[in-house]
Image 1 (cartoon, rainbow, N blue to C red):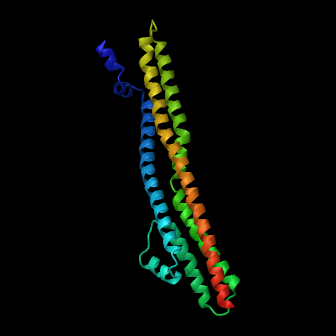
Image 2 (image 1 turned 180 degrees about the vertical axis):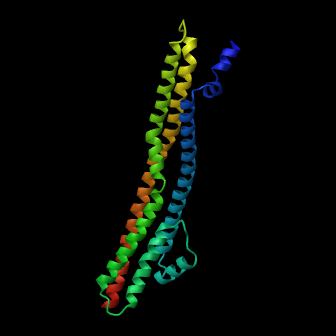
Image 3 (image 1 turned 90 degrees about the vertical axis):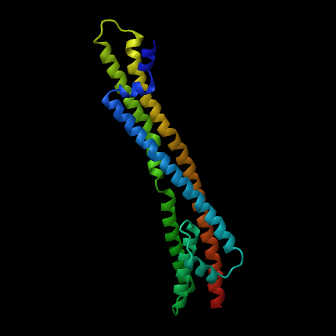
Length: 230
């Protein structure tokens, strides 16, 4: 009885599985480990980006002079602050065009708008990095595990054809080891899907706030350039 229990233990089932099923399990475990590493990395990055956004917006709306804020951001840049990169790109283009003689105010604002849109696109790429991998793991892992299960059950039935008397004890180990592949597939897929949905929503929220900040900043610069011209 004890030997039979050992034969049906998790490790025994995995070690006695066919090469194809073991390969499927190895792929799924590797995908799961990579997913968890990305989940922690993406979580830390998004938290840092939101914290930096809140901090910079508080400084921006405190009434500080924009030139002073630009110098502070340039002397001590925060790599986690996407909104700071957008501000620097917009104000740098604004200052450059304002120093040129005879530049139309609308041309200045068009240049600022393009510069900030490019900066937002870079931040968008940074926030959405690795999300496709999580989506791929979440959508394909159950099917990869199912493939291992089908293969393992197929081998179990092929083994049944070679015995005189088929019993549950004969077929149970093969089916159990096959079902482990599906379980590992779900174990890899479920956290990846949850993380993808959560990170995608948080990224969209941050990007929307970046666009809102860019519009508000552009409105300030628009008043500034037209007031100066008048």
